[in-house]
Amino acid sequence: MSNALYTAISAFSNKNGGSIFVGINNNNQAVGISLGKNTLENLANNIQRNTDPSIFPTIKVVQEKGKNIIIIKIEENEEKPVFFRDKSFIRVGKTNQRLSSSEIRRMVPDGHSGVYWDEKICENALIEDIDIEKLKWFLKESNNERNRDLDPELPIKEVLNKLDLIKDNKLTNAAILLFGKDPQRFFRQAEVQCARFKGTNPIDFADRKVFSGNIIDQRDKATDFVKDHIKLETTIIGTERIDKWEYPIEAIREAITNCICHRDYKLNSNIQVRIFNDRIGIWGCGPLPDHLTIKEIEKPHNSHPRNPLIAKRFFDIKFIEHWGTGIERIIQSCLDAGLPKPLFEIKSGDFVVTLKKYKITDEILKELNRRQKKAIDYLLEKGSITNKEYRTINPEISRRTALNDLRKMVDKKLISLEGSGSSSYYILVY
Image (cartoon, rainbow, N blue to C red; front, side, top):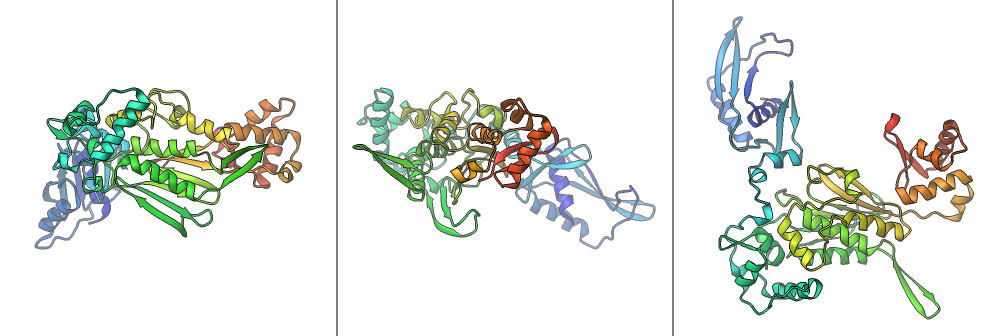
């Protein structure tokens, strides 16, 4: 049977149920299907093997104009989502649409019970799995950074209770990720992969490392990896030495911290930090929360952490703030460093932050007219520009002149046209 059959079974199982007719063509004509001795039994077994959780449909054969038609009746499954080959689908009209990561999460019962993943009990985890020294370090840091009054010499269990990291007398997922001796024994996906590529494509590795252990150390190790692979420029002004990184370390650290804190730990994937000659990409695991869009996160917004326990403990040691300002700080750090506004995207279901280099040389500027130079300044500050915005900063020109100016900049490979029609805009080429 084709993949389309199993896709339809997943879709019907996830919503409302339905019947699938095998032996009827797209014109609703009976073409029939040949039946062997074990056809129906094999079909039922294949459906069970290719669905997760396994689906047990009702299967029967009817005759239509002397031809065999198989009818597979699917009931909406109580346990959702139902997957076929690690993908899940839902019926929309007459088509089967693949579910996004956020749609899948909404189907999971925990998403409706108010129980966050990091608050859940980590089965089989014991107090002995906690790194006492890391916990004591955390207590000292939180006392210093947030004026908390937690005694590092208290019994471990009492401390973890005060930090809300024990539930029903058992360790939570957050406890293991924050202070576990070996968190990957419980969560193999809780790692940060870092790579320095040769050139501008993710093909040839110059260096790569995988950082495991607790998520506090992961944040620092991943940041240090980036520092090892970007340039540090030093200038002397009078008696003062000034160091300037190729990219602002504050922005890199903030982006990595956000990914570790807000990633979807239910997904079987790793955070990735990708360093190229012209950019750094930091890939999270999972999209933005359902109520947020890319445009909204660039503005002041309330903080809605996916993992509130981890977020609270990161707040205790000033890794993050509660006020939803992380993205703003990343943007401002890049602009202050003379770099363009970072790019925020959803790629393959994951939230991605890209920091880019753009060095405007005197040679480039000499080739531009006054209007185009103003556009470069605008792009460095805002990240993109439309024809209308170009005319706003150059009010004396027509739409056609603006279009000609922008086209010449495209031809020089300074900018590229994105989108189409009324939604088109230009960005710097890096």
